[in-house]
Length: 295
Image 1 (tube, one colour):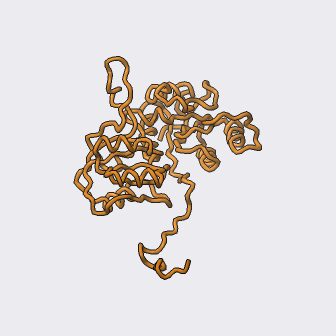
Image 2: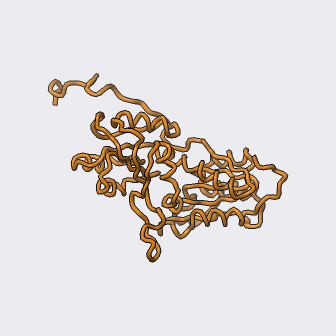
Image 3: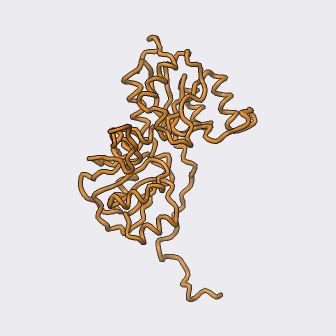
């Protein structure tokens, strides 16, 4: 742990490191990344790394004595006309300012970085020989953009059945009520796997083109999944959004620890909104025979 008596870098120093590792220009055009609030000249000794800036993680930052929160998801993604303390986001903004806690966001610029969010997810599954699922656009002759891009494709150390891979993913990822669910034949043998931290259904077609055996991401929807399976696409694994992005926080903390005299703290507070999982009866068990149900 960094000594609290050591000369502390300023917020501007921390921002420079983050901008170098996750340049804001890599973010999607619709995204809102970078400094949200905070005085650049203020000293930063402790940093809390979180997926979501919500009241619970703000309370965690205050309890930890953090001077800065680095969040993955933007607090102010959509335009607002007020940050009055009577609003949800306004209360967060006021609380952070009142306690002198800065807020910085690295979102889609961290998603496409190499290494980035999906690399950390792939590492949890033990994938190797990684390459982008959707390669980024390079500058000039740098057509592969230095390995940047959305998602990652890799190979398992040894083949697994889909059912075994789902159990492996559930054990490897941070625990959530949601867990991991899979679509496809349970006995299907899986060697190559694509992953994407966060909502990745927009890359389903990329996974099909890549010819992977399985694709793990979050927030998959009923109809796109059904259509992909019917078309002979890869098996699909759906994990909690928070769980697929939480592994990146360890990498973020390591970057800060290696480059600055700060004390990075990783939040393990589960901010996935789903809090109850009630599995139904086994398939075919306890359900009435439709032939015996009166119209």
